[in-house]
Structure formats: structure tokens, C-alpha cells
Image (tube, rainbow, N blue to C red; front, side, top):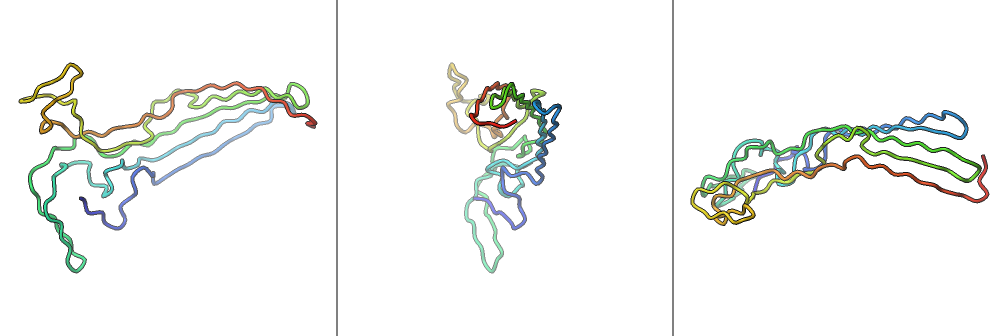
Length: 176
């Protein structure tokens, strides 16, 4: 159980979001567009109080509140956090184009993550059983069977890599 004070940012929601699309009609039949998407850092799930950049996952004993004053009594030292508890900001660009071959027949192409940038779109605080062992047994997969040696980590969900789509669409009774 952790205390979350007013003003703490919600995990997974960046403080700043920016999206913009620029479209250019090269001819009456051909258009090109680029979209930029930028996000600032966000806190990962499990870091609701925004304080897990350093410290431990200290287990908590009694958690008491009286007259809007709360306190926590520690049971033991926890595992240290070595990662910041946030996902970094990022910017990606998408490209699209379409060409009208004849009235109603459109050829289109789209490239998402145009520059194939590696980025993180989500995260979660957790512990990993794939930790070095001092007293435990390590299985063939790297699993440490001694759970007291498991270490804190931040799981990160990678953003989508470059994706390319090509399409052909036809609309009857289309006008130029």
C-alpha cells in the first residue's frame, strides 16, 4: 500500500501530448501527408505516487490515518529500485500518400514510424524471477527458485516498429 498525495500524475498519461498533420496536394489527383506524434515522459503503473525513481519496494506494516495525517510503519527493508519508474518521452512520424488513378479508384500507401525509431509506450513496476542467485537454484530457463533474491525492475512495452501498408480502394459514382 502506498500513499498517493494530491497532485501526483496518473501513470501512463504523459503531461504533454502533441500531434500534428501536414497534408500537401501536389496535384488534383495526388496528395502527401506527414503526421508527427510527440509525448513527454510518463510514470509507469505501480508508481502512482511518482516517487519510485529511487528507494525500495519496502513492505508496509500498519498504515494509519488520523485527522488527515497518515503514517506507515515499515516491516523490513525492501528490494532497491534501480530504474527511474518512468517511460521516456518520444516522437514518431508517420507518412501517407494517395493517388487517384481514375475517378473512384485510389491507390494509397502509409508508413507508420517512418524513421523506425525505438520507443517505449507503456511500463509497469514489478519484480523479476530472472535474477542472479546467491543461495537459490537457477533453472535451465534462468528462473531463480529463491524468491527472496528476485529483484525489482521496470517492465517496458515497446512502441510499434515501422509498418508499411499499401491499399487500393474503389468508390462507385465518385467525382473528381
